[in-house]
Image 1 (cartoon, rainbow, N blue to C red):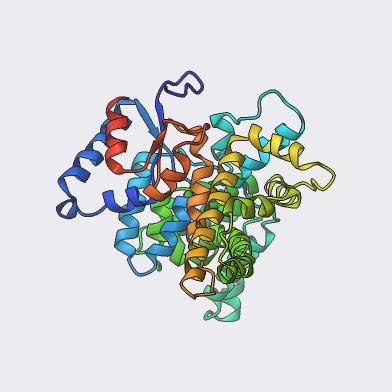
Image 2: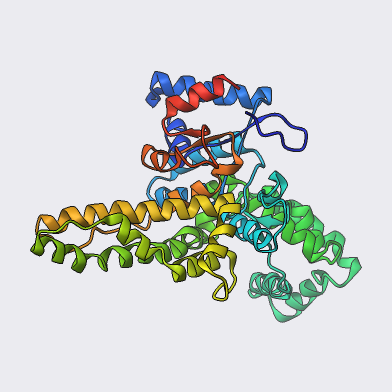
Amino acid sequence: MTLSVDGNDSKLVYLDANDFSDLSKPENELSSSDKAILELLREVKRSGSARFFVSPIHISEAVHASEKYKDAAVRRATLMQELGAGNILQFPLNICKIELARAFACEDSVKCSLAEITSKPDEWFGMPHSTEDLKERRDEVSASIDDALRGLNRTERRRQKSKLNPKKKSSHTYIRSLIKEGLSQPPSSNVPVALMNPDLVLDWYLGKASDDAFRKNSVGLLSDPYLLFKHFIDELGHRESLYRVIRDQGEKWVSFIETATSQAVPVLLLAKQTGNQVDLKSVMSQIASESFWQKVVGSLAEMDLSHLSKNEVREAKEKSPSTSIFIHILLESVLVKLQSTAARVNAGNLNAPNVKVSDYADFMHAIYAPYFDIFRCDTRIGELLGHHKAVNGRIASRRNDLLKMLQQA
């Protein structure tokens, strides 16, 4: 069944990060099956029978992998741009927050529209651009001009500064001629100035374009995966901040899983010593206590839910498809770690297995799943999602599954 959004019957497709990575390899390195899939992806996009989307989680994962492999990162970003072409998603936790606000307000319709989960032109992956005063940016331009004139004698320096004063309309023609001449010269950095809309930037500096127009132009450039990876990440120093997009939250949820599993070690050890079996489902029910629901759902909703009962919170969670998916995977991950911990304790190892922060990216990808006709993920996550009612029948846990589902589009 195709999700009809705004009268458009295209299938909405979310690709796994590995799809962008593997399918963007040089042609001579692609397997015959991957070549067929890539050809089909391009075909369904051209025909309009499928629409592909890029999320901030795709970007954040690619940032981490790209530091040593710039060429591969640019190829991956090029494929993102080719297929996603302006279909940029909001940060996934924004979606949980919107859905839960509606659920707790007892609204009939909780699920977001496609327009609500996609990033607007003045947003960077759903995050509004900064509203800071751009006076500092103007001062930086003025300081750069002062530096450039520093080698002149005092009289000539004052004459040139007067000719370059943006507040004097008589200076505008001269400033524009200098900019035009500068654009014809080889750039001093790897950032292609022509892509930055120099006319708009100049109009902003001269006071003819608003700060808001300047910000929107900057946000648009940084939302383009190709430009981001080809030019801006390293030149403008964005790599660490982009990677922290998932790592900061990831550390929080990894800590939760590690705490839950490590606390079970004494119970499992006692069971081993007394020859008893531990019912892990019983342990899970203790972990998913009333405070668990209040804290976890409250964190996603950014609300204090301490006044609500476990049943009230769970009811709101069930109404929110993205939240339901997230908590489903979170609890399933805890259960898997408990099973692994039990096996380790039986073997004499009293250390709970480590949880990788990178695993959290899979949680974040999965939040989008209820909004897509075809949702690609790895086999492990696919097994966790396969029987969830919100995404039943939409999961492609293997690339061949993606091929079959797209051929039915």
